[in-house]
Image (tube, rainbow, N blue to C red):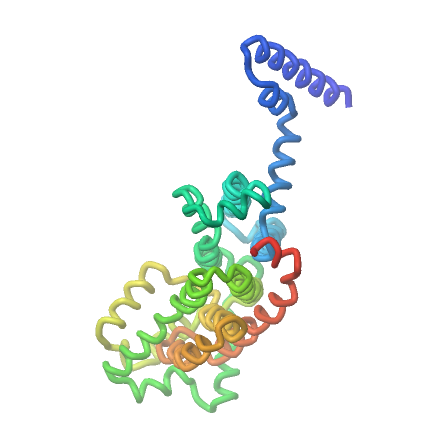
Length: 358
């Protein structure tokens, strides 16, 4: 206790001395007063401001990072580099808060009060305002990618073995066959390429729905869709940590007559899979969960877009089995988590978040 008081006294003595020297040098009283505050108080105020600038999406994202960090700490003996993973998660969490705080600060500097806000609406935004506004709204896509790639290191955090045999048995019980093997009889280069192209459309659903809402300046709708996706993904990520599935691509290798031959789409997906494939995290299918959450978002906020997306999403679900990436059980799991993302995300969104995004 005495050490704490001594340190506080030294800090106060240093601050007072700095203030006196600053006044002698003619610095403004406001700057001196700001610098006189303790670093802890300054950081606390900035953290509170960053949290106030964040919304429901950030609550879900930071909540997932907190849960996964707690699991890493609890099961640290099952990981080669737990400290590195925790450090990376802390860095991502800090980046999110800094981004929220910076964008809010830039916005406040321009729209300081109600009167200036009305005037500034007719003024073209500066490059800085556009820059921070863009990244404040589009960083969720990078966050989802980070979490998915990180799962490759967390799939055996809790359970050391693969659980694919259970899903293979479920698929056989449900259909009477092994679906990925059975579908091979219908494979042709043209069909393969079509299915691989449809599979690739997964990357576009959230971009398209978000892009339409962003272009129309429907901020409430935009962040609602991002929140649906965040909840759906977070549920899937946690399930994947406790129930590791490596997918038919690995567990059933050798059961097929040969690789799926195709054209440009097949070559592109092979390239993506070669450099970005995550072994594990197949159940539930995050591809399906993300697509379903985005489709529900289109239903809620742009009904015409829902009807455009629906047949493509249905084909994409089939393509994940055709391309040997998922079991039928993975597809059902993705549909459930994506729908839960929409339901729970809608429940989490509240008047405070709506006011902040408007």
